[in-house]
Length: 77
Image 1 (tube, helix red, strand yellow):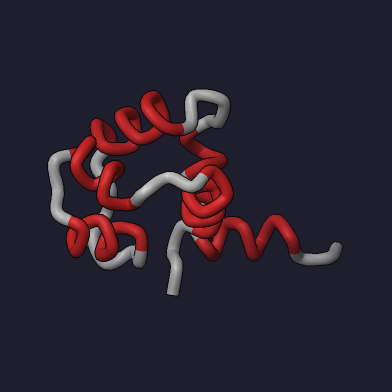
Image 2 (cartoon, rainbow, N blue to C red):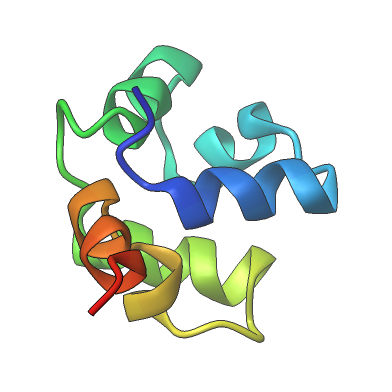
């Protein structure tokens, strides 16, 4: 299960290779997968690097919204 749906969607939409993101934050592909799945948290420096290098047009709060946060936002009133 993807824990960060916006991040995962933007990676796919923009055609960014996860390997490149992993290398940019100094982790292996499996470590990035664990972070994307919410098993291991992203550090603040990792969040800043990913946003600055790959998604400068998005806020960290939006980009790293979790599945729970996006579900709550999309619930009907």
